[in-house]
Image (tube, rainbow, N blue to C red):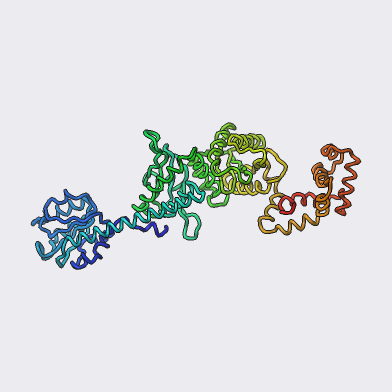
Length: 543
């Protein structure tokens, strides 16, 4: 819980007793000493017997005791009525009516848990009222300033290119509690939680917190700008997990709700919010932040119910620059609609920062993995086309399919597929790649990602450097011939057909390649090294 979560909306009885105006009266607490943290909403002074009927609750009542009654039964009844009104405290000034407060009054206050304070010295009530009201107004002003500050930070996030998820996470940190943005039908669109003290995610998972506490959370409407069913676009639910929802949190949430309303006026924002929420869940599962035991319950909340079937991890990686920030919503809706066609449970998320679309697919008993992967890959590509992102000048998205397994294998499978999708960029195009057959590509990619770029560059230079140098100044490059020869597993007739050359031309080119590299192209170890060098070349900066 951050420091903002401790802000009080108004002053407490304890704080009021510390003000000079009351302190000069030498206050003594006779009852309710454990209730001094009650909020003082207002100050009222009065001497009539039925003053309780004039109060609304939260008042600090000042009196000399003239209306308390003379009999113990009247005094107890007076206290009970004040307690029923839930006033903050009763302050009685001694001297005019009592030299000391009657035991019946004190005992009744203790029984009702009502703070009872006697003043041993006379004080001007107008001075006390003015001091406490000034404190309340200053407290409200400070509260509004903090709410304005969080609104400014939310606006800055949006101006820097962030969206509703970033606003929600900022608000969760401010409140010290998880929160959830609901659709009008009550389904979760996006859940966010505060960070822990070490900078990591908080202990309480926001989605599970929403499921358990949504009925007790504080709901703030995100206006839709219309009437009737269109009056509310979404609802922001503040969940009291780590601390109560303070008034400053509610004010900040109300102001953020107006900001979210503007953001969500853009088309299909609900769709991309829900997709980003599912993407966060899948990312947390992949990184081990959600255990296999917790995952099924959270997946059910997100609408994914595979039953006892194994789940198939799939990741689509989009080319750099696609989609643009404004087209993720359109892509999310197009993908969701296309993925309804295969007729199997699918949990689809988006990760705009990484340019990835992770998903889990239920693999039914007896269903062929490859056939299902074909259908899923076809649906993903159809969604990309529908979203207008299949541009001729851009590379096609890379789809990688992992191995099916239970929930314990789902997280590692998603992580493996995501890394394999990054490693597969630049490979000859396929409808989808099997993550299990990309291990060499993944090994080379990991070497580059972990600072081994120089090692890969040196290896490529030693293995095929002379050939690359030849091609840079040659009219007839030889690298395509070597690539075709290795792709056909050394079958020369097949290589000649692929290159559309006669055999003698191919033999001459192969002989020239062997001479340049100083090696034997029929040696298995040489062939293995050349294969690796061609693959490693894609992971180096050197052309």
